[in-house]
Image (spheres, protein in one colour):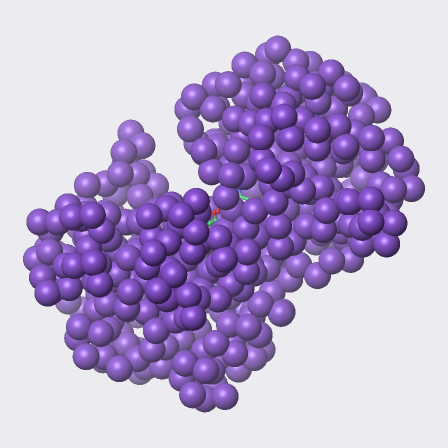
Length: 475
Ligand code: ADP
Ligand code: GLC
């Protein structure tokens, strides 16, 4: 049995802005049957503090990056948690990263450096009578953890998982002291990034092993196109970088028991869920496929290309229901598209329950991302017989089997991949979707293939376990 400390800035069911929260929330449960004990260190944002029941104070610190802090130990929703209660850093309105006006908190580097520092303290001194044998850090927010382990002589191996290389966690070069960093490491071989301090770069340089959330993204990361300035570092560490696919929670996303749905075992059961979904979105009845998008609205997700391809799709009888929020210009553009086309409906916001009803009632889910480390919504789609139409990148390429003529003839296809990703290619793929939807037998085959695909955590948890074993020599 290995004891692992997972260090993350978000975790389901307590706080979520994206897929990282789902992964951090699912890993401990997926690892437990394999004999690994994972505890999770998470900042005490107001919503987290409110949810805690009878926490125990296990560490106290008078001066954690400018104020007093405590680590609380508690159990919640099957998770063993260490909560970093540091009001001067985390007791704020807004999201974990942004203030109420949508701007980054200026002290984000210090806030999450503090989280990483506490991870190091727990690895060094233990907490609640528990000593981790390995630290698993997620994204830039935990990027300094492997560095602090090294500089404080804590001989515990570390894994850094890259969920999204677009976020580097940069700070001005004059913050070395406030971030508790050694000036000697402020160079290309250390955490320096073009004159700035990079939290993610620190993790990439100092973690014992690196992972990302799909094998294709692991390869892509070492290229200038996808590495976003860190591809050079990743090339030097290529031997230590592996891609392990995310899974989804098969109980939360279960078409047979999902309370949001009229129960269905096969695609035929979609009829009623689809009728209800059309009604909910105010879409007319139609013979064409009902496609959905459930997404952050950001450049990454490529939805501006969907806006361009949309007229051709709806002209041919397709329908779109979108749920999302983020970039204000994109929100406005989709609201406008909905006003222009009767077959387009849009909800701006974040709504977990609605996302279930959409997955249940739709024929297809669109994920035309420019890059996608793994992606979860295409996996929900597969499980619900909601055919994914995806860009051939990252985890999307690894989880969807393209309906090429050969894959259709061999009966293995599960969706459609678009490559290269342009508005024109996306429009063609949407035409293919419409044509395949008309072919009742072909569509039924796609759906049953999709629903049979294994999208849970089992295989990936075993890969993480093998990695932990290798790093702690406890195989
Ligand atoms: P990312 O982490 O890049 O946003 P993922 O596909 O890995 O992409 O994870 C996104 C998660 O957030 C999924 O669980 C998805 O269902 C959920 N999600 C995104 N936007 C919304 C929304 N507007 N309402 C409900 N759930 C959403
Ligand atoms: C990131 C990526 C997404 C991935 C998620 C969880 O937010 O954008 O592709 O699924 O992390 O690993």
